[in-house]
Amino acid sequence: ATEPNIPDLSAVDSAPKLPEGTPMVLFDQVVKQFGSNIVLDHLDFSVAQGERVTLIGPSGSGKTTILRLLMTLEKVNGGVVYVEGEPLSHMKRGNQLVPANERYLRTVRKKIGMVFQQFNLFPNMKVLENVTEAPIHVLGLSKDEAVERAKQLLDLVGLGDRVNQHPTSLSGGQQQRVAIARALAMQPDVLLLDEVTSALDPELVADVLNVLRDIAQTTTITMLIVTHEMQFARDVSNRILMFDKGRIVEEGPPDKIFSNPENERTQTFLRAVL
Ligand code: ADP
Image (tube, rainbow, N blue to C red; front, side, top):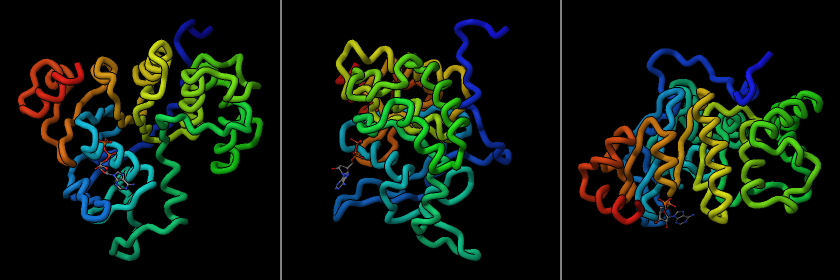
């Protein structure tokens, strides 16, 4: 018999075997600009497999842009983004890297799951269909397989009894938990969380964060997180990256960054948010 209260995460954990030393995510000299506004200026950082990294910093420092580059919703202006050692922003042509085309992006995008601030559920579909849609149409799962996986994940996020409802009949917190189940149903190797509680009423935040804590504690999925919930960041992250104006000004384990920040801009930022 399985133990009670330990979620079954077999539908979530599908971590690839990467060669020793290959980062899950690598930004190599990445430049991103909007017009003349240079948002990321030759940014270098990497995230190891299974690591959970939270990006903090003032509004406009480039955090969301980093997630959007990983989601291939934005294109780099310089440098290369790699996932699992393979280029994401580019594709290989012989020994050269050339900008990725749509067909290539459709393949590499499957490695990445994202949960957005505004849930972005399909309003015309039931909860269950929201979660089975992409596994069926993008991964090619049979309907039965996709339904089984979706039910397992909806149970995990505490919504097993809501499968036949429409998202609009759910609270914001419940909708966001559906969105988490939907992202996990694709068995992404990297999960991106972009201010996932910012649009929620305060009393709904805890349920969403608790689901994410469970996932963080019981799976090996790599996570990149942007959040204003500093206690949550402290609880789930292995490492904090403090951004200012598109650069990492300080990084380290959460205890160090939150209790004993060295950089003056980190100190100022944390004084304002804590
Ligand atoms: P953060 O997530 O840290 O608040 P963002 O990555 O959202 O920062 O934004 C970084 C900078 O990029 C800001 O100056 C913002 O105005 C600019 N920016 C982001 N997206 C766009 C866009 N689509 N068009 C023009 N400027 C943008």
